[in-house]
Image (cartoon, rainbow, N blue to C red; front, side, top):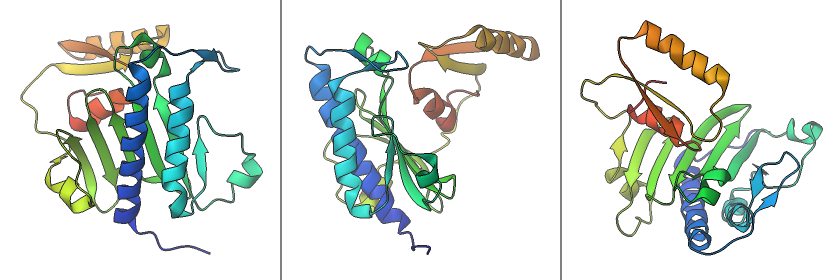
Length: 218
């Protein structure tokens, strides 16, 4: 049975969950911390775990299940029955967090029948929030003070994406920690197709945000 979705309320819940997780991540970022290795040899820290717990707690009143990078494994037979669910990476860019270069994010999306219908990406170090939802649009919010206690207040302080850019070179943004030979070949092909190509390196989902806001082309 399909449940009616209150997009604005759910988006505001996701924003709140991301900001609270970001606060916890920054607390641990300024401290010494241990780094574990997951089964796939990717790093795991207390910040990943705490952010996961905070997000799950803050989204619990939505009644939708959470599929998280740091949550328990859930069989596909069960997940395939979910009409709506939250897809979460509580600390995207753990390698960047460990390197302390600031290029990590909190990622939350609401999935409906295998499609993302709203999403939030928060960059804790720069206090930059990117968010989007069907029927609302895509926005960037630079947090400078207290966050409004309603979505309308946040929208009033946000910039609609994409941002109008001055003429610039064709710009490519690629992973800082996972740059492969295939990616290098792709970039070389772009250099052939375009007169001048700028290359940016960045960690986590910040890359996607740069494309969304118009600072990069691909």
